[in-house]
Length: 246
Image (cartoon, rainbow, N blue to C red; front, side, top):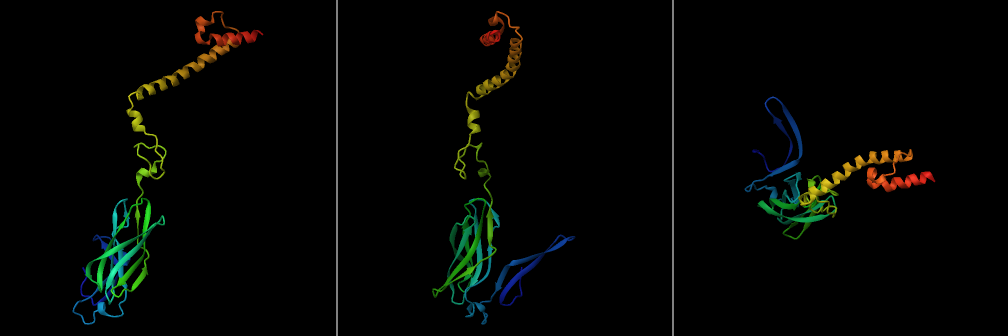
């Protein structure tokens, strides 16, 4: 907690983290707060030099997931009184959105405002580009914002494009992949696999047999009764022997 401050803006420069044995100083340059008193005659909230000032801006998350909401919070002041605040947000795809902030605490001359950013695109960075304030006199001012961004993590389902195990349509590529689960569920799937395996194994056994028959045919060792010994290969061997005699 902080106490004993006079009116004005204060910036948090660093904080100390310690476990009793080891300690470390962590620098901090993005956190500010403003001290004011309602009964102070010199209250800077009503000072005419306080025109459209933003004390601090902060995002509720630096990393999130698709469909989550991230909140932008800021403190702002103006001697006339702020009527409206909105923020321009741009993502890494070049898409922009304007969010409207609402005052949660304080008053129009100095208060805390909050708005919600929708994170709809995975593997995308969203950045707050600017904040526009309008006071009760209708005067507006745009303030450029730096270093206020968050990242939406990539959707793990979008990493598979050709082979889609789940059978869901790949939104990123627009292609429906081969559905393994549906193929396995087919009633004749085991039979099909069995026939394929038998064909492959049979092919391995037939190769040396054909090679042996062909070798014997070249040496003229084919008997007259082709059909009894060689079955379906009889016509092939008979034609080879005939060509050899010619």
